[in-house]
Amino acid sequence: MGWPTLPLIPWEALVTSSYPSLTRALAEALVDVLCFIDGTDDEQLDQDDAVKVMEGVGHVVSTLPSEQRQELTELVGEMAAAETDSARRAFLEEFPEGFGLIDDAS
Image (cartoon, rainbow, N blue to C red):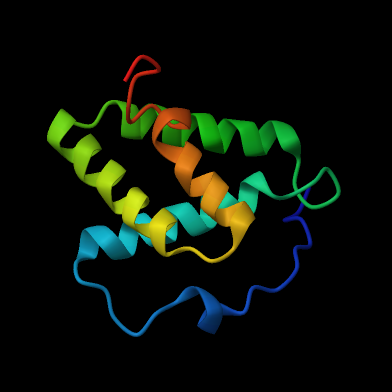
C-alpha cells in the first residue's frame, strides 16, 4: 500500500516569515498537520491511521510537564485568537482539552 494521494498544500500559506521562538514554530507546524488530518475523509486518508496519529500526539502532549503543557496551551490560545478561519479557530479552541493539555474539569 502506498501513500494516499492528497491535495497539494500551498506551503507559502502555511509558513510565515518568522516565529518568535522554536516552540511557536513547532506548535504551528503540529497544529497544521493535526488540523489537516482532522479534516480529511476516508478517500484521502485511512481513518484508523488518522486516529492513531491523533491519539499518539494526545499521549505525548498529555505527558509533558505541567509548565510545558501550560506553554503549549497559551500558544494555541494565541493562535486561536488570531485565526480568521472559523473551522480552524474551532479546532484550535478545542485543542487543549481534546489533546489532554488540560483536564475536563479545568
